[in-house]
Image 1 (tube, one colour):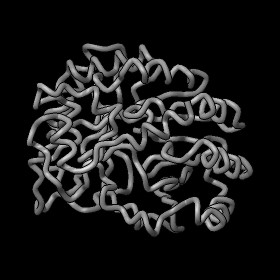
Image 2 (cartoon, rainbow, N blue to C red; image 1 turned 90 degrees about the vertical axis):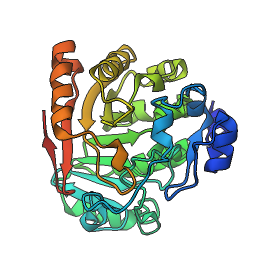
Image 3 (cartoon, rainbow, N blue to C red; image 1 turned 135 degrees about the horizontal axis):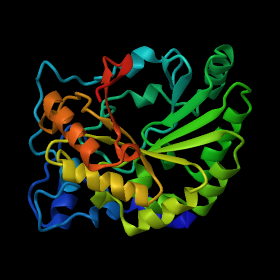
Length: 314
């Protein structure tokens, strides 16, 4: 299984030409944020449907720049990086840039312009450890990127063991889209690492549509059934901006043992303007979810405000 996920991570569509050939269309164009689609995800896309909600997340033919409300770095993460590779916005937790690599390039990604070259948590670990030890109010470390699951199990385990040795850290949170789009990444070894650590472990998956939850994902995510599994989605026009799509996602996530967590309003990164769902529409959709679903299946509607705090919209 270990070798299988590494093989799958290399088995990826890159660039417009390979994508147009694979899907037998001419919609893909080379663009600012390079196209990257793992075959595990590409095989879930309906080649006969140009409006497929999975396709729309990785293709950006309508990309446009210049809106005064959209920015290259909408959350301004680097201004909250007191140490290279570490972002500290909230008193009790820090986020580590554990990897610059992600299995897929989603065209709404707010970190598509992030300066990863200067923010590598692995190479700057000693300074990061000193910072965390000096700030004893920090009790949670979040692994992000890129995607931390692009690291090998061995590198991930080594990083977790270093975090474990900091006495005031109680919780490890891992954010991952790779676990959804390349479910072969959820290896037996990964499950063993996360189940055996002394830290409380939370894995936050990034899934936006029920069609992403393949049978392979459902089977493999069961390996992590002993830890807390959450999901956060981004509300995207033309992808999941209907009560039915969001309800289906919540129900199928719960069937797989994953609890809906956040429904994020779009972070306004340049080039993603066509994904924007307005506030009023978002609130109406959220109200409909409250009518359709049990309360524990309704994700909280949120927005990151100026990169400084998370506002609960509903």
